[in-house]
Image (tube, rainbow, N blue to C red; front, side, top):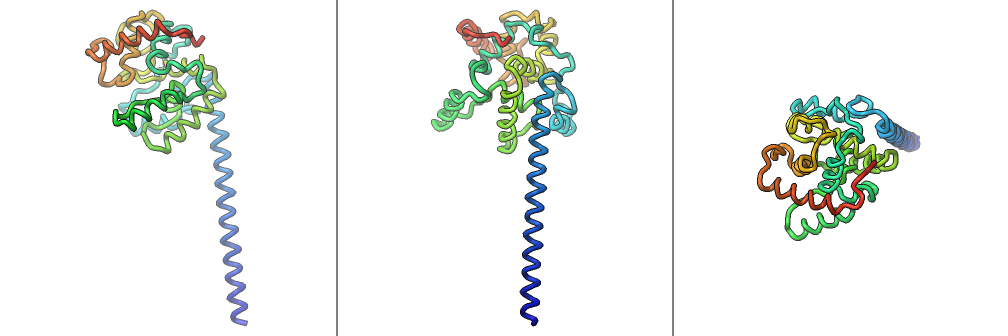
Length: 246
């Protein structure tokens, strides 16, 4: 009698344990579905709503709370047609020459970066413009694998739901161009005292040349390395067969 009672108690405990496990799985799946739905809405809203917006940049808002020196996204939004064609061409030449043809990931550049690492030539970035938009608009500033996973996920959503025109417009308005300088409109006024639409070819190439390290390099006081990179960008701009995204 005592043995049967113990067996019944054990079965009941196992049943409760299984029920608890299934509840956790159920809630976990529900949370995952909700997060996917919210992320799709975030990217969908980005088709027509310009950041900053609490609907679009929750992680960015949290990051700014912990890092008050991080530049906020400029409220002076420039439409793509209001930005100098030289800037669009220079940025594509410098940052992502296959932007108009890839689907968010440039596997050619990624392969080159991996080969350089394997040969001990150091680390170099292989992020596309779409990946940078995902990181800047939606995510927190870190180099963890978790963040990189979310970055890849948002990159896929951006390419599925937004046009190349819109992705480039968001990039040019959100990219970091120096301490307290966020976006092409702010960069044009801060460094050259002109509007984004009046930037010259040389000025555009200088702005693109400092993008790899905007807090150490200056487009108005370019060092030898920046000047060398500017010349290379100008050459690449001449070679580009499809510089326009509009």
